[in-house]
Length: 409
Image 1: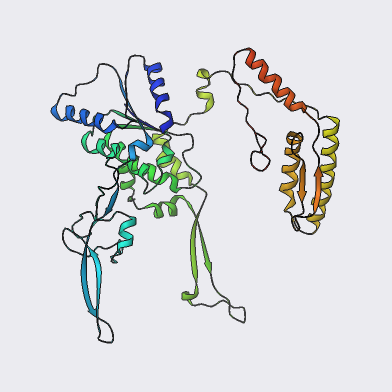
Image 2: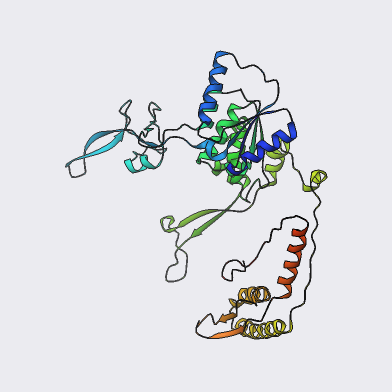
């Protein structure tokens, strides 16, 4: 079993493997010796000494370590071109050319690529498919373990477990390429996530194409077919802007039109039935609740002190009057200020006065509340809770809101 997980969870995966499987051999690929360990495994595999293990073997690698490879630089030659312009003058210029066959390097639309573009993205010659880049010996000398596994250890691992697979959704990211390499190298793949998509249909495309390539190829998609995917299963907003003439009639010239297409949140239900249900297991918290520790939420209500309540009431009255007056003028900017100030003041009343400036003139204070002597009832109750937990040898985590401007921590 090969496990790829976030780097901070590699030790936890090793601990869980030993706890759940008992007799298991765990190998970590997270250190600098990861490639050396894989080299030794590849040598045994090539020599035919790799017998089925007597106990389950779990190999664990961090997501960042799996993708890290060597630095690269563009590798090409210059080709001198000459042509006459419309006036008959001879013009000379240079274009990047393939170092292998000498052909001019072109992009996807058969337009010559300049050297700046070659430095930003790896490119291949369209004539002979030779790479127009090479390893940069001045950079770190390393090789991506995911690529090594795909080339030298194909079929060695029975199962690939991908933790937080939604992080691999990028089209041209190192994590996405590592995901594709590992899925092709392992016999089966189990990809796990709690947030499969972020609301956009293209978040699923590259995950599905790399994990179920034959299915999407049979449906007519290519690895660059995300635009067609969005047209079929996503939501696109197409905006056409046309200028108006003096008589307020729209011009008909297409050259003056500006068309912009933007993606919008939304995924077609067809994706669920056609691509997800046949190969996806959906779990709820209740499905695994039997193995979780007991959990309980309790809300504790506390009354404010007299001084605190007096300041709060005055702050609420002043703010309500200002918000009402602003809304009559068609201005709603004070609504969020009204909400956040009244939510935070009861917690911050001990150490921070509340001052609400006028949005139009910051020198004018439209509402205020002063500090009150503490400790406040909420602080007292929190200290009692912490002391009770400490007496039982338990730890306490305190989560705070309003940690930016007011910094309640």
